[in-house]
Length: 366
Ligand SMILES: Nc1ncnc2c1ncn2[C@@H]1O[C@H](COP(=O)(O)OP(=O)(O)OP(=O)(O)O)[C@@H](O)[C@H]1O
Ligand SMILES: [Mg+2]
Image (cartoon, rainbow, N blue to C red; front, side):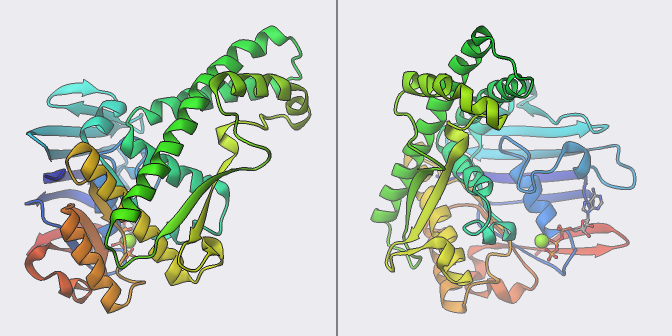
């Protein structure tokens, strides 16, 4: 079983005025020149999961320019046992709305019916750049296993922002802090638990898999000290840290200070010291492990979005990737500048060509 879009309509979505794709669940190989509108299609699919999608764009940025009135996506999502009609849109730059089977729904509800994982070129520097990106990567993985992870993250950020405001205003009254720290501890403990569980699932999936991609050993690290082990310990740590936090103007303990540390297991080399191609291979390995673990847990392979994934891989690694995707059974949406990048897939994939003229993208299914 797999999760798959069987129909996708884009309306006034970035460079696409109106595009319709009919899919049959096989991987989707999208080719076209630079700027044709390929990544825009992957971004559209990414919005079938909670959040801002793979470019982390605001609803306003996505609206097709110059009209900038709004945009809409409609998709038929096949999930085990049933199909859902999903619509998501934004009007006049307002926050995006979601409707599932004709009823207004939350993004958390969307996360319960769709699981979408992605790898995009901006993530090539994930191991080298700041901890933010790695935390986001980790939280997307945790969210894929537990759709409620997003709720905990929002609750934590909200309470932390309010507490940071108190710190900056140099408020010293303990009563103001207590309630926010209780909220941060509750949400923070859930976030940490979700991350720990996600790493366990990935590690088990990597250990079981026969794969051409290198195993990544992952570990959570705090920027200082240890992550408190229980909700009560986290609450106490936040309370104890108040004085230091006042000086810093922000919270110095908690899951927002966690980093994801990766090692290329076979070589014992930290991911950040690996070659460009090796770093990419580690990410591919992790996304495949995530897909395998999910397929086992929810009984359906997730949708994968692999933007320009073929570009960095030599022909044999590419063939291995395609074989593994087909074995997992995911509807993997992949992009590349030319059809030859997908030759090894043959008729195991559907092919989509995207062209652009006068700022308008067109889609042809072949
Ligand atoms: N809101 C918008 N309205 C109209 N066009 C937009 C909007 N946002 C982005 N575009 C345009 O969409 C075009 C296609 O972008 P996209 O990233 O999908 O290209 P691509 O096919 O993935 O190209 P590449 O091979 O270079 O990655 C770009 O030329 C960009 O300027
Ligand atoms: Mg692109």
